[in-house]
Structures are given as C-alpha cells and as structure tokens.
Length: 512
Image (cartoon, rainbow, N blue to C red; front, side, top):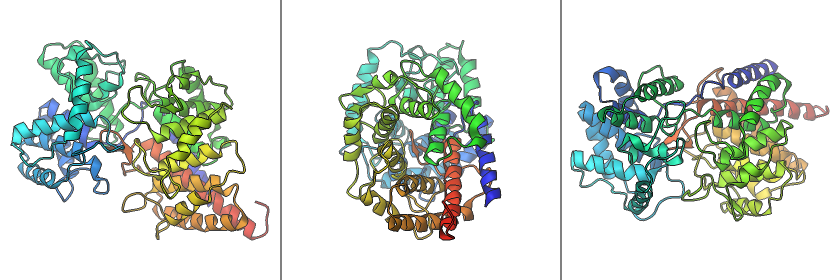
C-alpha cells in the first residue's frame, strides 16, 4: 500500500507539472462533427469521420444513454456531418433515433440544459429539417423564444469583444467573420466548433488574415484530446485556468494540498494564479471572460496556499444574496454558489445569504443534485459538504450522511448513471472525509465500512497513468476534462488508502 501511495503522489506531481499546455480534454462528438462539417474535405479527414461513426450508440444516437438530455446536440451534429460525407447507414440510424426521442424542450427548458442549447439546438434542427425533410423530428419549441431574444440582442452589437461568453456558441448564430475576432490563442470563444465555423466563413468571404491562427488553434485543440486523430477536437479548449484551479481544490478536499511531495508543483501553480487574478476575476481560460465559479475556486486555492487575495474580484458577480456564474445567465448555478460560500468562509467574510441558498438547494434526501456544470449529484454534494463545514469543526449532517451511505452501490462505488465511476466514487470519499471528522464512534464505523468497500472497488480498477473516459461535465454535450478528473480519481484513491491504514491502526489500538 505504501508503494501505491508513492506511485499516486508521483503521478499527481507529474499531472500538476504538465498544466502549462492549455489543458487536457477528452474528444467531443459535437465539436468534432461541427468541425468536420465546416472543414468540408472528407478525403483529408477520413480517420476523424471513422472515429465519429465509431462513437454512434446501438440505438442510433450519440452520447451517454444514461443521460438522454445531452444526446440531442451531438446526434444532430453527427447526423449533419455524416450526411455531407455520404455515410448513409449511420445517418439513417440517427434519423430513426431522433424521430423516436421525446422532446425535452417541448414545454420548458430543463435547469441543467447543455450550454448554448437555446442557440444550438434550434439551429441544428432547422438545418436537418431543410436537408432531410424531418417532419417527425423534435422541434424544441421552448427554446425558440430564447433563441430569438438572444439573436435580437446580438443584432444590436457589431462585434463582440474577444472572450465574450456568447462567442462560445458562435457557430450557432454567426455568419459574418467581422462579428468576432480570434483571441490570442487563435480561438473564437475557446470553442473548436465556433472557431471552425468562423474559419469557414472567413475563407468563403475572403477575410483570411487570421485564418492561419484559427488553423493552428484547431490543431492544438486536437492534440489536447490525446486521440492521435487529426480533426478530432474537444468541447472546450484551452482550460488553462480551470484545470489547475480545480485540480488544487480537489487536492484540498482529499487532504493533499499541503503534502510535501506535491509542494513544489503546487507552489508553481499558485504563483501563476496569484499573478493572473485581477480585480475582474478569472475565467476558465486566460483569454475568456471572467466568471464567479473560476474566480471563487481561485480565491479558495490562493487562501489555502497562505495568500491573502481580495474578495472584490468575486463581488462583481453578486446579485442580492446570489452569485451568478456569468452576468445575464438563464439560471443560477448551485456549485458556483457553493464555491463562493467556500471562498467567503476561507477569507473570513460574511456569507449568511449564500449559506442559506446552498442549504435551500438540497433535494429531499439532503443532497445536492440540481447542478448545471456537472451531471452527477456527487460533485456538488462533495463541494457543498466541504464549504458548509469550513470553519465549523462541529458541523454535522446526519441526513446527508445517511443518504450518501445509502447511495453506495453493491459493488462499493458510487455513480449517478447505471454504473459506478472512479470520479464519482472519489467525490463520495471527499464528502465522507469531511463528515468523519465530527462523527461519533458509531458514525465513524459506518463511514469506515463504506470506505473499505470503496477502496476494494477502486483498487480493482486502478491503473497507473490511465486516461479517464467517462464524460460527466456539462458543456454543449457531456465532456471530460481529463487531468481534472484524473487528479480527482488519484486523490480519492490516496485518501481511501490512508483511511484504511488509519482504521487498521486504530483497530490495533495504535494512535490514529
């Protein structure tokens, strides 16, 4: 076990040291399909088309069958790309899939709808209907007024500033390359799909001075997927703020933030974050708009590292007693407010309103499950437990503990879908780690038993330097920020190993 702990620390150190390349993100069906369609050269992208076809599920759709809300955008996009490539069988199966699917936007817009759904889905539906007829396709009527209102707003602006949030969905509304300008990385809104669309329009309309930069960006984004296939791209890139911020925050949840083996790698990242955090906060990437979520987590990380960052950067996003992720967003994010609460408590600032909001957004079991950036309830639950317990050593929540223990699967793992995942099991362990600190002996024994089962499950599935494959993060579709997830997996396993050693020592009568 000691050898495995050392191996985990070594891999974590390696992951942290790599976080200067823009970030690692798994491949995206939606963005790859859009990029292929806008690229137009089927012959030069045959491997990418083959990859796209290989991702099609047995029912004809794309995306996880566990989470049907997130299957429409990748399926529409893949259908359109493959229709242009003449992949008749795949197109026919996708058409049947879409015709059979109930429309989740028939009457209302779900709270956890994918990013840009109001712009993207009606446009994809319209393209498919004009291409294929498609009388029986879902029409997403609840999204239409939202799309129209957004288009009216966009119509009043000649050019959006680089990094504006709406540029992330430029492919769904932009037609003139003059309405956007590539950022310093060559991207339109840190989106491969938006950048590929902008590039295609720029080439068509003869506006080509910056096409080369867009090409270079798309090639770099493709490399970030580690697929080795030219033209296969991620859902978002770069993530050179989000990736290190969330990774260090995760280390804190596992009790690893101050571990001597990671100290130098943590110090380098903290110094960069400290230099980058300005009065307006931080966004997921250096050249993207600041948001409350990234700003709050950055504040947490800096405070944990002994810095004294100003809370003013977070106050920009405060409306009443809530924090909005981006100004003008459709609905508030529970996890953004959880992270804001954690930052405020770490900084010793009043947070009664934010705390009340976080408490009020539990489900009947006492857990948090109405999240817009991650599909699993285990993600906001782990973070909420840490935030609520911050500075309150006697904090206990028997209802949440009972629900968390009850949700453990027979195999020892946790998961919001039909199977346990390593990432979600790690989140469960982070929450239990906090809860264990203030539990009575009986509660601690219950927790220890759950951790022992989880450790057995994790050990059976752990492989050194394995790339996570399960997309659980919400973008335009579900996606996987590879290093962020891998750090969570390793930190969860390290915590379970340490816990197991402690329980064995206590059982033998040794000091914990």
